[in-house]
Image (cartoon, rainbow, N blue to C red; front, top):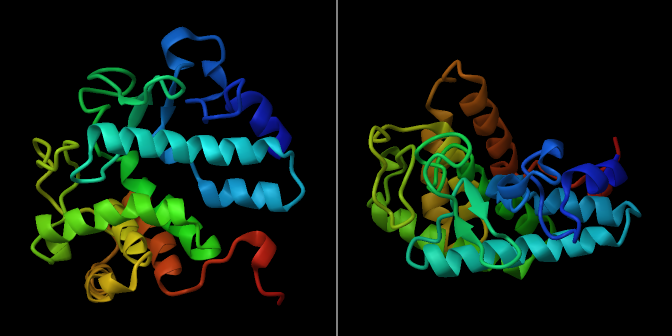
Amino acid sequence: ISQAILTHEVDDTNSWFLLGDWAHNSGQYYDATRSSDFMPGHVASFLAAGGSNEWQTVLDGGYSILSAVQSKSASTTGLFPDFIRFPASSPSPAGSGFLEGPYDGTYRYNACRVPWRLGVHFLTSGEPRAAALLSKINGWVKTKTAGEPGNIAAGYWLDGDTLPGASYFSTAFAGPLGVAAMSDGAHQAWLNKIWTTLDQRALDGAYYEDTIKILTMIVMSGNWWPPEKAPCP
């Protein structure tokens, strides 16, 4: 399976995940990636399971791309865009209407998963690159919301302003930010508030929000392990 992913869903230099197996040799869509498709914990598991050493290149490439786009386009907030153009040469937020809609270059329903992806890798490996990327997001969101998780909006411009029509609470955004908070003990009180907010909220009845809520709460409860480190039954 891991070799098939490398062959069909990773670029030819093994530096980023393609938008899909259909993106090979497709011009602008080949030279792009979805920020939330970089799942470093999973990549590390492929490598640990004896997968090709090319997975190390994928791991390093993903971190390099996220670091570059954060530094260049969201140095204050730390937020990531849903889609990233030119990952090899000049990682930049995608323009409006690149693939899904007018907010393709903003922190929305794809990129909201990135803090969860990075947080899981930090928790299972102590990866310092993950902690560094999460540090800015943690500091920014606590200030933006005045320390109240209920004020987390469902989408932001990369400068931190709330997107039009996004001034509502979504567990798809709050849950991943809870996992992000686990990267630094200084955020324990904030983490506790996010947990309580999620715990007291009924399921939305929407598969995406509810799935992210449950998976991130599994992480926050200390019950997430990479397959190669999972306790034996």
